Amino acid sequence: MIQLTNVVKRYPIRGGQATILDHINLQIASGEKVGILGRNGAGKSTLIRLISGAERPTSGTIIRDMSVSWPLAFGGAFQGSLTGLDNLRFICRIYGTSTEDKIPFVQEFSELGKYLSEPVKTYSSGMRARLAFAISMVVEFDCFLIDEIIAVGDARFHEKCQYELFEKRKDRAMIVVSHDPGFIREHCQHASVLVKGKLTSFNDMDEAFAYYNAHSMEIA
Amino acid sequence: MINNTTPLSRSFEIHFRVIGALLMREVITRYGRHNIGFLWLFVEPMMFTLGVTALWTLAGAAHGSSLPIAAFALTGYSSVLLWRNMPGRCSGAIEPNLSLMYHRHVKVIDIFISRILLEVAGTTASFIILGIIFTAVGLIEPPEDILKIMLAWFMLSWFGAALALLVGGLSERTEIIEKLWHPTSYLLFPLSGAAFMVNWLPVTAQKFILYLPMVHGVELLREGYFGSLVHAHYDMAYMATANLCLMLLGLSQVRVVSRTVTPE
Image (cartoon, rainbow over all chains, first blue to last red; front, side, top):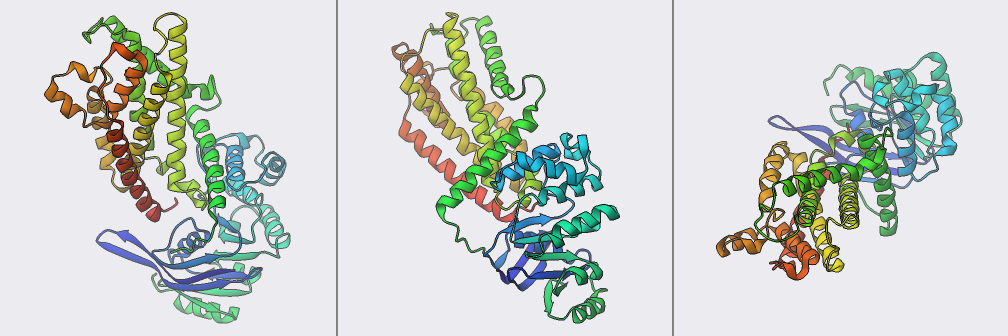
């Protein structure tokens, strides 16, 4: 289970502080799939980073009783000067899993061929997303945090990702962040909507979408 | 705040794993796999020390004493590398690693520790290898008291590591620190005891120069090396206290930074 209680996140900005997340409460049971809807800049990625533990909340508590992935997103989680393979080795080392047996899968899945031995900073955004997704399937977690990563790549890659994540790992919990209601409806059981730093949870998808649409014009 | 229910042994295990991974990551990006690769780790400081030894030898006995100049340069300049390079490497160390901080196990302190370990390893290897080579070719005599040298080296490493945590932590809070550190380290070099013995100074100057913690370390290092040839001035209790204070200050800064760091 993951439990967020009264989580607040503020960032210092010129002339004061910006409250990005304002007393967020959220609970995710094992195997549960929750979508978080919010427009650009609503604080979705911040929320995901807090849940992952990469960042700390200004106040409030976050309890993680299951293993939680890092935020699977396009950017981040990789060191640009390292090659794709060295990034894979780094991640295997820090999560304490063996490396060499994972290389064939990453090679095949990412379709990067000889570019796996080139620095990640030379990759295109599509190549980066393929590498990111392939590496994130190498370490197993009870809960995956998915920050829009699936939305990238061509249709075939899209399909492969769907299969790896939503078919093979359908027993896991997932928190999916998106501004695309269709994607959330397809993969999640419940949805929460982030507006102006407040998170409102809905058991019913249609209610969540109605709320999202009604508030989608409001500035975060 | 986040509830921390991870047992201590498990925390250590994770820290060791992460520091190991970061060490590999540093070695690969800093030295690459081309030409001599990670051997640069100690070849680089060796080149510095060799150059300084050559310069000081050419300049003659400018230090106005009968001490063998090669040994004097080796002990002096190696100790400078030890306390100067660690803070230099830790200053601004977080930024190139920000993307790796998406992984919650990777903490600010791990990044600093991995860079400090790498620097200590490189400088120590350079010191030992040069010492062996110089002794083998007859340029210097073997040291008198290895244990004293080891203690001095440890104290200087501790000083460098504590200073590195402080400079590294502060440099994340304000970029002024990075700009200040360069002139500061440059100005501290002639005062650090690398190029003189405290005993050569006027008595009033001795009192002031001994406020600098690393001077005590270099004096002990020289006593370990030259033994009765020198009259060393040092107070290890003072140096340990100074190191401890620096380290606590440094750790407090690391703690502040780790609360606010935002992955890229």
